[in-house]
Figure 1 (spheres, rainbow, N blue to C red):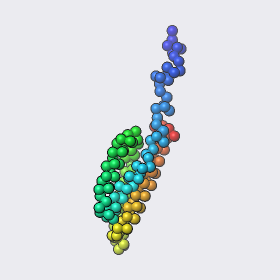
Figure 2: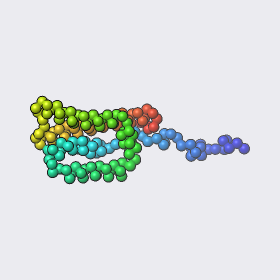
Figure 3: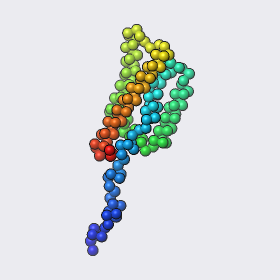
Length: 155
């Protein structure tokens, strides 16, 4: 007797999992909002330290908590983080942020308006944090869209 005629749909489904059940959704892969808060604070760390030099223990603790939480609570989402860091867009964002920081301080110094006060550095840290968060959200949205379009995630 032919084996294919006696197979039930459930048995066939057990042997061949559907791709929709295996693929993660974009919502499951999306990084949480607090992750971007950590990254924004760390992006402004240089200017935060210039504004308040005694804040370094808090920044070290923040970096440690960020690393610990990323490796434990976000274990499933580390795949997206790895994909993001492998992507050219994320590397461009990182290099662009370094260039923005150095370039803006250089230009302000050449114009005679160098940031030297604590409030100025705090404002600069806030701006750098906001720019970092905005660019990371954009890179995540682009990467998730690409994964959905490539069939590696569901919408």
